[in-house]
Structures are given as structure tokens and as C-alpha cells.
Length: 162
Image 1: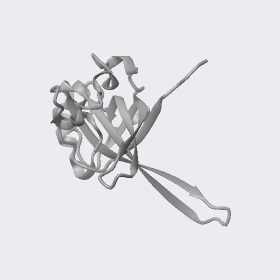
Image 2: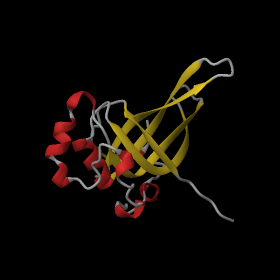
Image 3: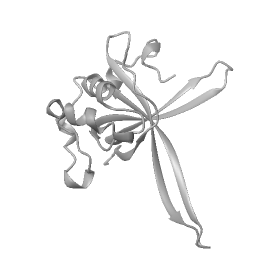
């Protein structure tokens, strides 16, 4: 039986990325990514539907995101979906979904912040202001030395999404 867990999103970053470390000194960055669908209802009314996605980066890609990605910037990610269930402070079960990003490509930045990206272009392999001009690198180009799941344990609160 074949099983696939892949997701690709292109959207705008909703918060400034902050690099954090887990108890095991693993680099991690969590962001919110907004994607917007535009469509027309049957009556001709134009509608914009914006969805917010929780995205988590680990290891080297987390360090790149923390250094170069800005709030409002467009990025393209490929990754996998991970769902978690935990007991909240109120004793109720809580559900959390996130995308574990395995690959990231930077796009346009808001308010002419693109100068920072251009100055650092030599350090970055995936910088591109127009996604249609350059093919997305293969996921294999940025690999985890260990998958995020391999170090997750029930008593490792530092790795939990809340």
C-alpha cells in the first residue's frame, strides 16, 4: 500500500522568525504562513479565503529562515503534515496541526526589504523573487540528519508545539 504525506505551500510569512533551541540543542523556528484563494461564488461575488498554516523548520533550514526570512515575505515550502493531540491546561484534548518544512525557497519581500536578500544572495542557494523562473530544488538538497520525529519523546516538552 502506498502512503504519501506531502504538502507544498506558497504564501506570506505572518510573524518574524525567531531561532530557538530544544533541550537537545536542535535549532527550531516556527512561523505562521498565510495562503489566499480567490474565487467567484455562483452569484458572481468575488471572495478571498485566507488560511493560516503553522510551519516548523528544524536544523540548518531553521537557521537560514531565522537569518534571512522577514515578516510579510513570500516563501515557498515543501514538507509534511504532522498532527498532535495533547491535554490542555483545562484538561480538554487539544489538536494541533503543523507543516514540517523540509525545503524552503524565498520569494519577494515587503516594502523593498529585498535589498537584504540581494546582498546575501551569494550565501543563499534558493533565493528567487519569481518562483516561475526557477524550478523548486529537490527535497533531497536539504535533509535532516535525523527526522524531527526521531528525537520527539513524551517527556521532551521542549519539542512540543505549544
